[in-house]
Image (cartoon, rainbow, N blue to C red; front, side, top):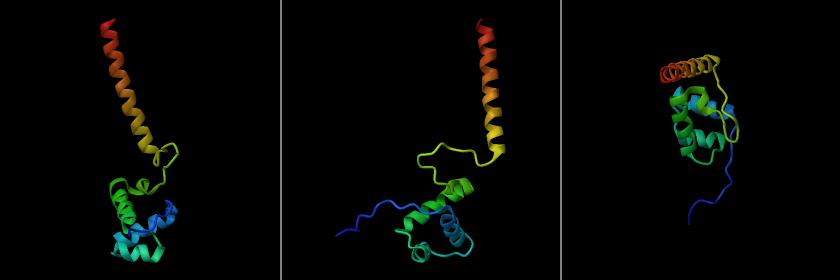
Length: 98
């Protein structure tokens, strides 16, 4: 027989951060972390570590059901600059066609 069905449980950002820190800095195993914090399975911690490595602190945020917010104002500014550059190119093309 398989594992008991348990409802999806969410963990506080602080627990996710501490779990990643213990794995990255203290070299704890996924199993040690899950036992310390009562986390349902080690794959959850593995995903947190993976997301942290790819996206930094932003990867540990719980974005379910919420609008994505920019963590860093500089990222938002860079995005707007890229959008402006695309719009300027579109305007140039449109002017040539008219």
